[in-house]
Length: 485
Image: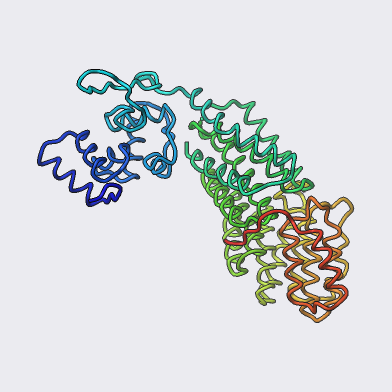
């Protein structure tokens, strides 16, 4: 077989010949490397007949058995190292050398400049410290080094408000890092108290802060939470860390939804679900699912919205709570959009009953707390979808200082309803009004795209349509839009 045309069959044939000739694994790896063009690092794996997944599992088993700490390796990283697209750290090279019973030269990860007669190769001494495992503080130092560039990017984006493709890639990278460390910590009560206070402050600030700077702040905080979670903690500590992780992931998902990156929003809801499921708190699990219904309602399938809302209601149970009320209200609005008027009115009445029973519960104006404003938002949205014109009037009479995009979304729902009824002029006037009352920094994709969708349903020659187009031209967000689930 020509060099560079490696196949599993070729490697298998060389292993069989090696067995017949009683070759060492090193000799087998050299043969595979010379014949197939595989890198030396890859040839060592193939000589053992391991898949990439098996190699990672063997590496993890070795590190656990010899107390070498957490290996910083994955299938994707191994493939990158084997195909010379990236280079492992010195500590990882040492671990790979232990795994394959070789040295950095034989792994193709170091050059040999030895002038010994006979061409005898010398073993390269690793940068790691003999058989001594990496200490936790060294692992933390590595994590901090990895985060430094990412944190600088988020700080820059917060100052300049100019996110690009790399910004969103780093947001996704942060989620992947967080997912990998959820299962894997020495945290003091003071640290946990500070974290709880910070999450509470973020939930309060989120009600008035534009999504982009909020997303940057949350990303920076998640980096700290991930470091705290890097080692296993006592259950009570782990539970508080996971609860904070859930809340930060929810804030991230909601901000990404508003910014129009629905793919990453779905993924971050998945991270929030994984964290809340680990906590085991049914109400927290219900909250995650109830919050995700908004993403599905605006960017997905109303039927799936109903399914998720009912799942949240089942988890929330019969006790009055924000997740229970939100889930019932979300179900009502989705059923109304699907044309199930009877089901929608039943669910809306149940949401009202749950909310009425919550009167004695604290109604702080925090993200994820179901307040009178949220009840009004869902009630009005449901009535609009039902076409109940008698109760739709006066929907823009939100309290002074109500800074979120909810009033705009309500007005846009009303505009869509009017367009369906044939009043296109009034529909476009209300849509333009909705955009005009949203501050520029809050005028993100979720608002702009709903107003844009209205244009496809109206006569382009109407004066109000031309005015709406001009408002949209000034409002178009500079952020990429991804409406894939």
